[in-house]
Image 1 (tube, rainbow, N blue to C red):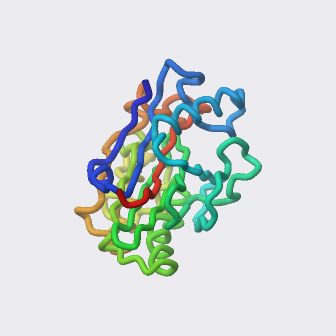
Image 2 (image 1 turned 90 degrees about the vertical axis):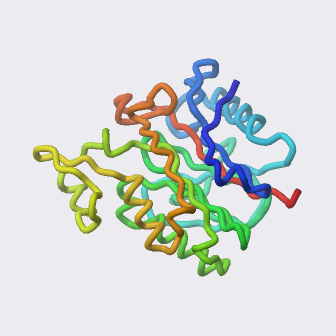
Length: 256
């Protein structure tokens, strides 16, 4: 059986499907969904097929992934076709946030500690999926994605629902000063421990969404640390460079 983590406020939207995958010892590579980490390709595609069927079998979905590079590059998906789903070669290149207003397209983000963020404009019917590691967070990719939704689709940030999915928490994300200093201007972004800092990436991304105009009551935090909950989610840091990745997915559906 495939278990998903979901956000209650996104689950309440009838024209939206979303999910965050979890580990499973039943399937190859503990249900890793990454094609870029040198696992046997057909086993990963098999995992992805199982995920797609568990996610939604009532609609013909196209799954879109990007070659994530810790950038602030944002791509608007304008064509209904799968990309990066069965092969890396046709993934959207050099990109860390995807946006679309086309139903039946599932936007997908792969992570194992970085922050996955799902956005849904309830009025304009626009969705986004964001990958925010510390470099993407430094470049304000969450803030810029909301701005791109405003510019391209006329979104009002007050209409946007946001889910900040499981990622490494402040409890476990130790960095040195050359990383932490990028966020010193944000109160409570880190806590010094000796000559190191415990960095709170989910919180920093929440502050970016708030600054972009998203309402605090519309932002739901999972409060799940991937390093603490390594039995349920892949954690690159906790697992000392693991190759597994879990997937965060969001898709628009037609009106019921």
